[in-house]
Amino acid sequence: MNINNYILPSGIRLLHVKVAGDVSYCGMVINTGTRDELQGESGYAHLVEHLMFKGTSKYSARQIISRIEDIGGEINAYTTKEDTTVYAAFLKRHIDRVFSLIAQMVLDSQFSQKCIDKEVGVICDEIDSYIDNPAEIILDDFEDLIFCGNPLGRNILGDKKTLKAVRQDKILDFYRRTYTPDQMLFFIMGNYSKERVLNLANKVFDSVQTVKRGYERESLKPYVPIERCINKRTKQTHLVIGNRCYSLYDENRFAFALLNNILGGDFMSSALNMKLREKEGLVYEVDSNYTAYYETGNWNIYLGCDDCDTEKVMKIVKDTLCGFADRPITEHELKIAKRRLLSYLTICGENKESWILATAKQFLNTGKVMESKEMEEKINAITAADIQRCAREIFDMQKLTILMYK
Image 1 (cartoon, rainbow, N blue to C red):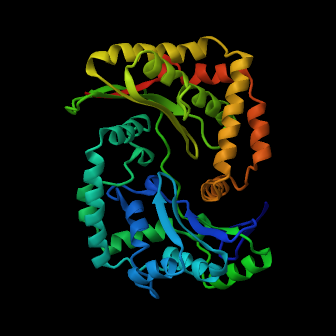
Image 2 (image 1 turned 135 degrees about the vertical axis):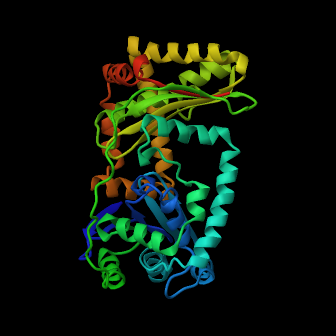
Image 3 (image 1 turned 90 degrees about the vertical axis):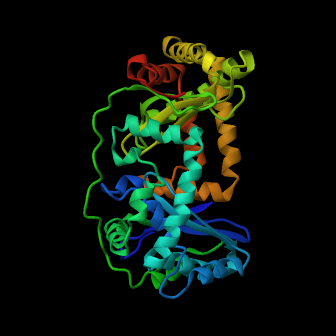
């Protein structure tokens, strides 16, 4: 795999990954998400993502879809708390068409009031569907608690009242403030020479002016752990317990990612799944999740259980967390955990689409690409003492925030 990166005259970064094969991927990652919204802009980042599909000065919404689907390609997009991504998968011979289209969608969307009104209606339906799912909404409510009302904890979809009041000038203000070239990365993965990629990039982005972001994101307030129970009249108790955690730049993130995987990751043999589901039969699902952000992170455990089992479930969870903090795992357990995680990462890495999306985001945030060999070295260097140190810091009972829906 041959990886190259460049900074274009406009300030847009270009990531080129040369791989063999007939299928290519390209797209743009913009360092703009929910946390870039000001007061009164809740949902704007997600709305802009929708509107990028609704027409440019050259193509209508129908033509945007046709430009991709008529060549058998697929196009998609998503918004997170910190970034927005638009990307496509296609046969390599169609690179000129797709490259140009993605660029136009990001840089030349028209944001007509008619399209805004239509998409607001679609998103309001999406919000209603989301509200009907307590297993999803509790995770956003939890994040809002640990980030103390900072936009980083805000629901990505936004709120209906704010969205229904959106006017074109407001969306344009948000877009111009946040979608600056210095915050954009164009990525391309396929069997192309660097000369072809650079020539195409210079042609497509030739007229883009150099503009730098003129603001700093809102700083986080000091963390204060909270315990809160909300009566949602759900059929079971939904519970989230967690803490702020390590950022994208913290070296502890590798050891904690391994610890999180042992605790309640994607494997059926995780500690919480074995204790709560397999041994006690108290839950259908239990997950431990770790998301690293620019200067902080979010770690949480989510589960649902019968109301009468809540106290017992809480005790098992807390005892499990204390166990990792009080005693180092054995060398045998550490060896198995490393092998399991490395195998999982290798399997995931075989999916080119997932790999390039994760790599593009990583490069946008850190300015470098961590290849599999370096990742393997980082994981293999983790010791049982590293695991215990992270557990003592993050699983501290005095620092945990607990949110419950009953």
